[in-house]
Image (cartoon, rainbow, N blue to C red):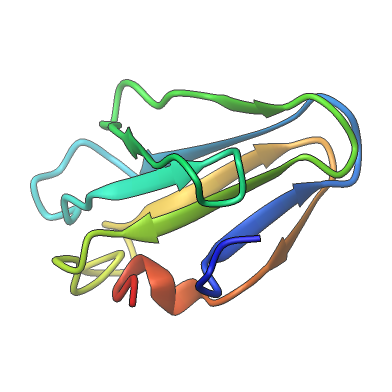
Length: 106
């Protein structure tokens, strides 16, 4: 488990997937910088996405976890009811941790 209470998604069904997406291609959707870890916070990888391209993270086994954190520059996940970033998932996934770690990783 990481040393901080980062936002965590845990597979409750094998082969569940998660992506971060933009609601549309408008420049009003805030650009955000996220990192993710699949090994309990030992290694962090940049999660780079856009409206047209979002990498899929597959949680192969029940109990597999992915942690997300921001880089400290994010002020908001969205700018309006139509312009926002969001998590899209398939399968069955539980959420835990602190969603505010997307804004302030400390």
